[in-house]
Image 1 (cartoon, helix red, strand yellow):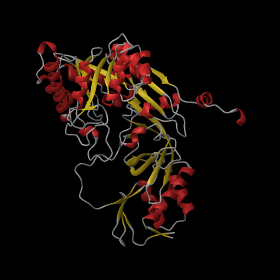
Image 2: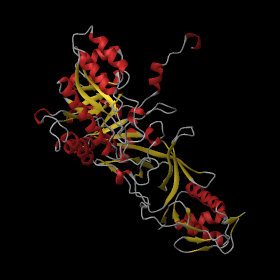
Image 3: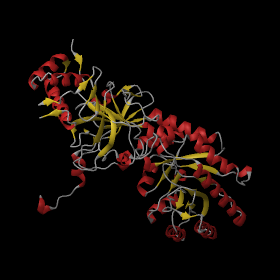
Amino acid sequence: MKKIYQRPTITKINEGMPSKFGNRATLKAITKIDGIDVHEIINKYGSPVFVVSEKTIREKYKQAYSAFSTRYPKVQFAWSYKTNYNDAVCRIFHQQGSWAEVVSGFEYQKAINNSVAGNNIIFNGPSKSDEDLVLAINNRSLIHIDHFDELYQIIELTKTLSERPQVAIRMNMDTGVYPQWDRFGFNYDNGEAWTAINRIMMNEKMDLRGLHAHIGTYMMTPEPYKVAAFKIATLANKIKQKWQHSISYIDVGGGFASQNTLKGAYLPGTDTTPSFDQYAQAITDAILSADFDPQNMPFLFLETGRALIDDAGYLLGSVLANKRLADGRRATILDVGVNILFTSFWYEHEVYPTKETGFQTEDTILYGPLCMNIDVVRQSIKFPLLKKGDNFVIKRVGAYNMTQWMQFITLRPKIVLIDTNGEMHVIRNNETLDVFKDSEIIPEHLR
Amino acid sequence: MKIIKDLAISESGFVFNPLTGESFSVNEIGVSIINYLKKEENLQQILMSLHEEFDVETNELEKDFNDFVNMLKYHNLILD
């Protein structure tokens, strides 16, 4: 009987101190997602294909909600549409009890189409047209004002509208994070936010409902949230003192990290990312210790996106080719590139084989299929000896990829949802040439 | 094409180049290939032997074999 074949490899042994932090060199295969064989998914829906696990979304949401609601009595999550605004995904979050957090008129319309009540939509972002604002005001949505121009835009609109705008201000502040995010909202520390609040309170035609701060993204420590929550609570009490007005909610935004590993990180994200409990402890500690009337505590709003959806997303693909670079490194070309895996610009994504591959690995660079130098999925990974046609699974791709992906050189693939009964559903079709035929217009003289 | 003189290789795949002091690790089929090269067998003969020994298609074996030989050259373990 012939021996099992694995392609020949040679690895230079380099001298150096052994590291106790070394990860295991072999990768355990991912053969199934929610009980369904990954090869069955690829055979049915093609390669590449995104897969979303409904079970994981619901479990993650319950974990997060439980972490906060067991520490604070009034908690409301609002699903961050920009993180993944596929309608099926949004509706799962809404079924779980999430409101919608949107940052454009387009996202606002999606939320309405997903049957979210107008007063359960938080409208964030620096870009809101008159048309967007009129709709949001008439629907009594919570408008988070980003800058003075928007504040005066709303004041102007109140002159012609009968409905009172329900507003909050977004703030940026020093929470000890470097670099400090100061692009969005009014600055807390230099008094700009206080000026905006006073301007709103002086207006008799709008209601200040909340205070919002979104201090950063991929926050690897919960402490800055504690600082932010404390500062917001302090400001809320200052409003109460001066205007005898109680705000109804404090919104600490999003920014919780998922377990992906950021490029340049020394340790994997699975070892370093704070848990929901750690974030919840920091935030609720600060609010509970603030000087609020116990009978009239504000709601705590959370706009968590990435940490709720990343784990639920998988990207399945195939190896297109192997080649050897001039410096001796192995290069593997995948049918998944930065065009559909946008997050590979900042994560060291975990890529797994779909069948057991033995102990041999090679230091490999993973390229996407684009004829572009930037199309690198992993700059360096200890990768098993996959050959042309073999499949792989990339984990934790649920956040941002299905919204930030771009149609570039190739067409975008299907998204498949595995429901809680293990049934598969196409929740977004792959693009076809017809998409372009339908939207491009050829002038008469070029026909 | 000749493998360098006195290249040491163990059954487990540890390779030592006495000319440079460098060491390498190769897998099972890599051990077979280096041992065939040490016996100065011609490349076609080596490919046939490997094909008899391992469960692999001819084209795949040839592609991987050429890549491996190129890596031996890259590490200066083969002299042209």
